[in-house]
Amino acid sequence: MNGLFIIHPSSFRLLMSSPPRTLGLAVGLNAMMVLAAADALFVFILARSPVNLLTPLWIILLAFSLPVLAFVAYRTVALLNAQYLFTQNALVIVWGPVREIIPMADITGLVMGGDLPADLAPRGLWWPGCLVGRGHTKAVGDLTYYATASQQGQIIVATTQGGYVISPLDIDGFVRAFEEEGRKGITEPIAHEMHRPPAYDWLVWRDRWAQALVMGGLALPFLLLVAIAFRYPGLPATVPLHFDTAGNADRMGSPGGLFILPIIGGLVWLVNSLAGGLLHVRSGQRPAAYLLWAGSALVQLFLWVAAVGLLA
Image 1 (tube, rainbow, N blue to C red):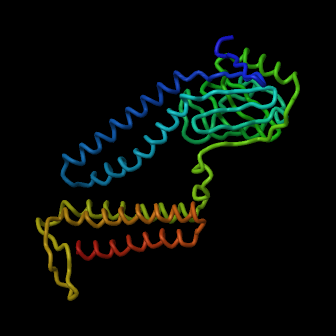
Image 2 (image 1 turned 180 degrees about the vertical axis):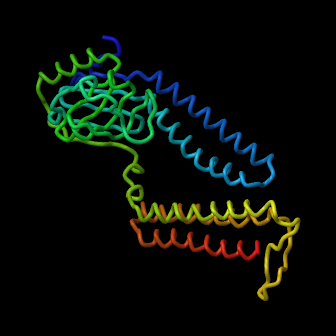
Image 3 (image 1 turned 120 degrees about the vertical axis):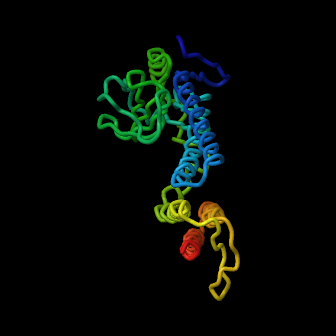
């Protein structure tokens, strides 16, 4: 059977099947190269071009493309060890660092992807050959995708809690072997388990207050950067960079020195975001984390006041 092979441990028979990986790896690697080339281009433009209205755009594109590059790299690497293992007691889905164990007792049947309404796909970021995420269909309920093929090459493992979308390389062989194991009966009760990195379960990903404070603190230095870049072409060759307690300019310099304000703001945001995240995740001290993130936004406001005074 193509794509399906059997291992015979001493106590039971473990069957393994791998999904087709070629398309997903090709798309993922090409996306990584395109994103890396784009980031290199953004850095080159920033280094060679004078400050203008487009400067914040290149910085924003660079800042947001790097996390996307990291995400695509993670999903691509996870494809390398993707496989489905099963015995008469359980189905185990391996996908990168994720291991999900589905007891045979919970499985109610197998549904061919082609038998369901067309255009089913997971929510979120995915690409051809790497369909990972959550979805829903009326026929089965909530779906968890661990697949690399299109819908015609998918099997939905229906359970009492929803369904798991997989794509064995040899669908017919997988179905025959899976049903054969199921007919043998369960010899050992197994509980449903999910093994994955702790970061997946951090409450901070679902905390809307945390997300609002962190993203708000990030938006302020970016907007300050845009404001300075907008005024930059019309500024004189020398501008005040600092005032004494009496309100007199005591330090003059190039307008480029004004960009130290959003840089300081960005660094404060980064440090406070990381420190607040550690408090939120490790210690469960959510109020202290909120104070740190709110303090970051307050610092940004002070920097805005300083920038307005210097530009005026």
